Image (cartoon, rainbow, N blue to C red):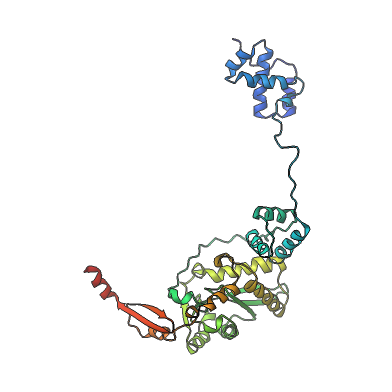
Length: 369
């Protein structure tokens, strides 16, 4: 049996080079050359270990002067379904998506409330077609930090509105070169947001922000405030907390990952407000812009952490349960008067509170028995 190592047709090498054939097409071309060298289909099949029916199929399609005839044809249908969406639905998607770059899951949930049923994949296609994608600005690379919650606030406390409130400060440089300090507060249970811009980052500014904070729900009954170790959360601020009987908890030094909720909401404000609408040139203008965003955040923006509820809706649900929302007044004092190395948990029955505390030594004795 003769094995062909050279292509018999003159100028075929040039055709292959010009046609830029794929590897499969070049392989089929060797079958054709073998057949042209006075071999039968059966011999070609045995030589290349290919089915004879396959070789016959490509022989019928083969054109000696068109090597591209051995390339696979497209299998795409001639007629495909076109994406059709009513114009009123497109306008609704634009209206919800454009201001704060709302995602497809929240878009679908909000449209469902308005009686419009549409899939998430279709919403994503429409976002691309209408050029509504959010292009993030190029920023310097920052090392990613894995954040983990570390506070030891009792569970029955931080699950109530105002039980645990996080505070943090974001430094901003306005377009005109003016510096601004954005104070941010976030309630743990309802994700309720409050923020205000000040000119300086001092403990006096923090005390002023705390007074502004306690004039609105659910921050009127704050039990714990969680902050980092910055100087703005010491001095006059700590004195004000003692006067108001609010307990103060800290994260570890240089550990923003232990204060994840407020760090995340600051990034959300940057992504949804500053990146989309930019910064104002004055502190007053920035305060007005922030207040409009806070109203949207608390009343309309859905949260995955709240099972796609808004903070306002979550607050209303918790307020319906009076036992959940009312704080026993004895809890903070009992924590202060307990001896060291004592474990304490509080059980609330309506308006009565019972404290069960046992020392660590007693618990160890019980385990030995």
